Length: 171
Image (tube, rainbow, N blue to C red; front, side, top):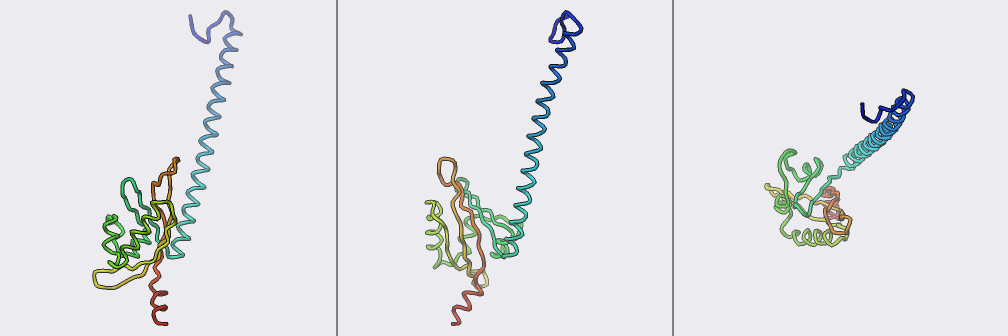
């Protein structure tokens, strides 16, 4: 017969098979090490995300993420609660802009432009609910760029500062 494990002698066949097993075993063990490394990294990343979520919830912060290419806005549960938006409802830039007090919309436009230009976002503004209630929000964020330095997303956190603003107005 013909093939990689057929030689003139049984010893030659055994040597060819042993070499094949050594090479195959080395590849399998290398792949197992890479998979294990990836699994450990995934576990660490998951733990880090969980710890961050706990810290954000404890601080009563809301997270936001605006994808500039798709114009998709993502809000965390904390942000949705802050804006009294259903947890399972769709949100978009239009939802946000509709809630922002009309007098504060130029502030928001300037803050978003800062983010698109790669500058930090730091803005305080009011939101108005349908029943006329007003809530003050402080939002901070930054730009996430691609490998060429082009802005891809704006990400940040926000906190309800209504109580602080109310106390300041009383003074």
